[in-house]
Length: 58
View 1 (cartoon, rainbow, N blue to C red):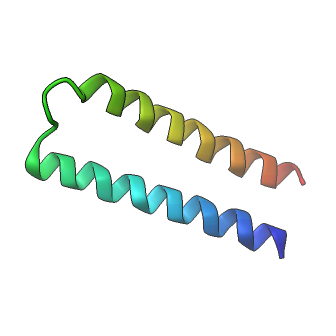
View 2 (cartoon, rainbow, N blue to C red; view 1 turned 60 degrees about the vertical axis):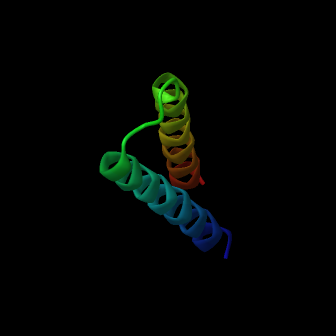
């Protein structure tokens, strides 16, 4: 049961970031938000990788 919860959460996070990325590609990044958005995307990527590695260990 917990395994499905982790995978479901990872899929939701990943799809949300994909949607954000596609929207930004379509409309552009507001001036001054490029660096904070990149930091957020990197942090989310790190979180997804950490969740997947933790789940595989268990």
